[in-house]
Length: 215
Image (tube, rainbow, N blue to C red; front, side, top):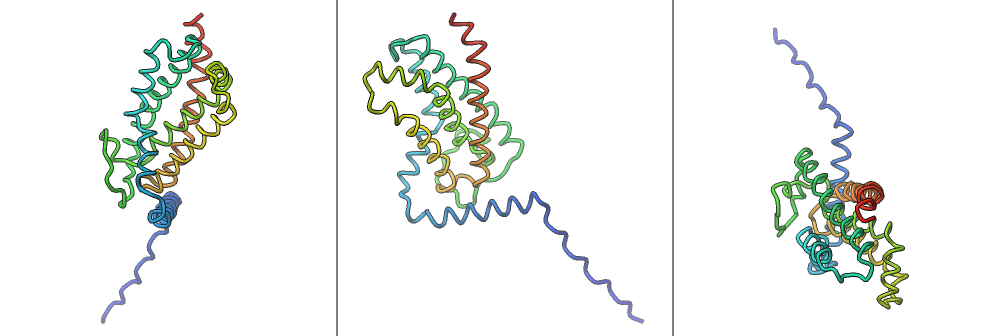
């Protein structure tokens, strides 16, 4: 007598996290595929370089060590130190998160220079967090920056600088998906973390440590 084999058990439904990751992967690939033939590579690459830490840290340190960078040395030093501390905080936050989560980058990511071992991982986007942190600090320091531009007789860009900085940060963040470096949720997480980093540095270091130091 032949025993009847039991019917195969149905495959388990994908978890909520798996469905979110699949959706993120799908929409990211669609955006990359739609825009890849349209947007020039050199434009996206320029945005990538503009938000890179290898440009950010030398630039901030150079301005900080140059005493005549701004006419108001006290406020300019506070602003530049905020940027420097924000950049360091960003490294401290993003690096361990990448190493902990270990999400691979998109398979279509090409010609990327890896600065550190954690750059192999995609979540969250370090470029997005860095430029968002910069834009947040610029926004929070807008009164000081406005006064500096007026003193330097750059009146024409006073009303547009914040739009330029925020636009640059938003465009650079979007370019991470369009260049194939990151998934959409990597960028969203990076933007949110960068805003929080900027708020933290401005509120904690600026109002307590730095203000007391420069009195």
